[in-house]
Amino acid sequence: MGNDDALARELVEAGARTDDRAWQLPLTEDYADQLRSNFADMANIGGPKGAITAAAFLGKFTQGSNGRT
Image (tube, rainbow, N blue to C red; front, side, top):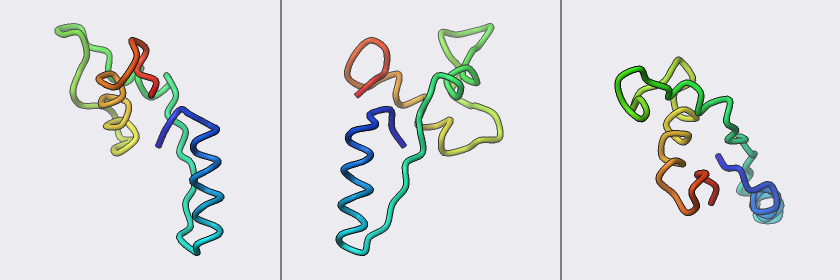
């Protein structure tokens, strides 16, 4: 999961060359919307999307003020 398309493309291509297949799950602000909370800066649980919502949560704590890595 990620929001860096160039890096994701490199990883998918490397996986194809080494028979370690991968695919990109885009990490967009659509998922971050599920983290909105009336009681805190953000909720630490999301909707039924599971892992991608967890990645959106963790993305808020990565390099850069907008969660981009």
